Amino acid sequence: MTSVRHSTPTKSIEECHVPPEAEVVVAPPDDETLATLAKAIGHPARLMILRLLADRETCITGDVVAELPLAQSTVSEHLRILREAGLIHGEIEGPRTRYCIDAGGLALLKAGITVL
Amino acid sequence: MTSVRHSTPTKSIEECHVPPEAEVVVAPPDDETLATLAKAIGHPARLMILRLLADRETCITGDVVAELPLAQSTVSEHLRILREAGLIHGEIEGPRTRYCIDAGGLALLKAGITVL
DNA sequence: ATCGTATATCGTCGAACAACGATGATTGAA
DNA sequence: TTCAATCATCGTTGTTCGACGATATACGAT
Image (cartoon, rainbow over all chains, first blue to last red; front, side, top):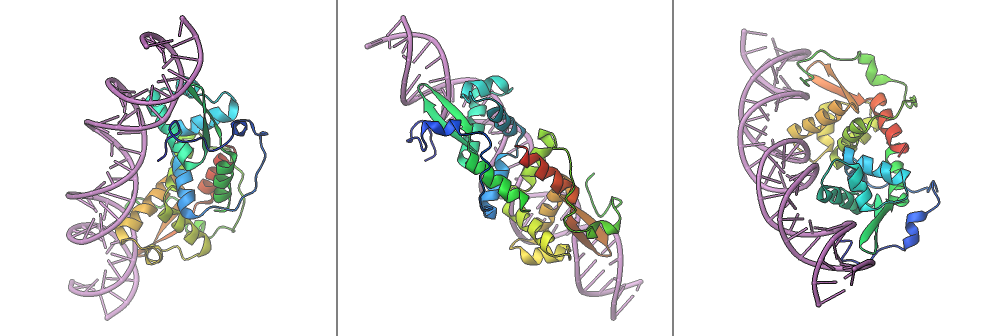
């Protein structure tokens, strides 16, 4: 069960507007988790999505679709992969979904990489 | 053409014994390169290999095979993926192959991740 | 209540990955 | 020269990925 629309939102709406660059300190993840995180960013489209979310604060699926040369369903799939890896966070906002970077997941990834 | 055994070695033998933690500074790679690097470490076995190479200085294929619960051919394949991504460096040493971490590639990866 | 919009999910298809055993090339030793 | 060791490569098989169109669901507006 990994749906967004059909599951309860996991975090409050304020999560999308955290102070930029909080620089959280976390312990490096285990290999399994790190591999999942690395695989999640192991695709150019998903890197673009992360950069997009880092630049803008809009974060709506349609915006991402507009920026990438991919079908809506494909983008949605990339968003799902990033979300399940814990790198982004989706929030239902009326008929649309607002995405933002999950600072915790990103910090976990950075911690795992820098320790290599 | 990506063979090791049948191509000329790309670097001198001293490459495997660089001063540990030289902390090279590099520019972040483009998305395509970063995705390739990330995908390369997006597997637990390959993470284990990197840690193994970071700990030991032995770096011989047989040692890696001995440490992982995988067939020799499978390990060789993982080594190839890491090598082609530029994260490790293989050197023919008589009938065996000595591997070591490619500090440049690893620095590239770290640079790309920390910038996210 | 109906309609249009936004988006996740499904089904499909081809490509890439992961693992293995078998094979072959190369080297050092007997 | 023969033999054993070491390792990359090949061929195969099953699994996962990436992309798409089509569909279904939820919601806001009419």
